[in-house]
Length: 120
Image (tube, rainbow, N blue to C red; front, side, top):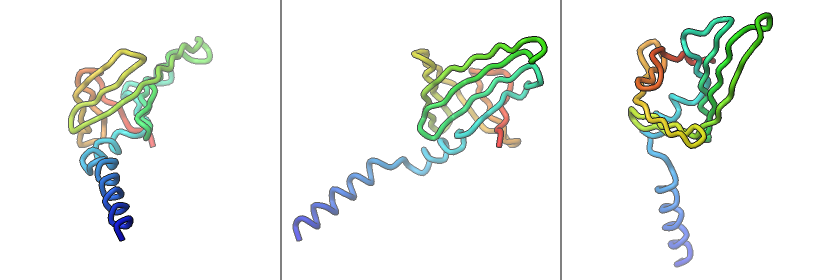
């Protein structure tokens, strides 16, 4: 009987401290996915990918097959709270305020003058 009580206490403790709060999950889930900056065209793409494991990557592509394509990929770790997004891009820590507007666009106040559109 003592072993069962001890097991239940340990289980309850573990579950309580290992789970993210509902608020943390909401912020996290809203950001997960691929976001493309709204000025994309046939010659320009700037994307942010937020993966479920708090790892992501930034891609930038300019040019066409005809003119030649230049692209880059930068991995980052990320975390978010109610209104702040933190990205660690290879040792450079970027902290920016963020919001998702009524059109569903991601606004990164201190990172980009243009919004990002979620790609489905």
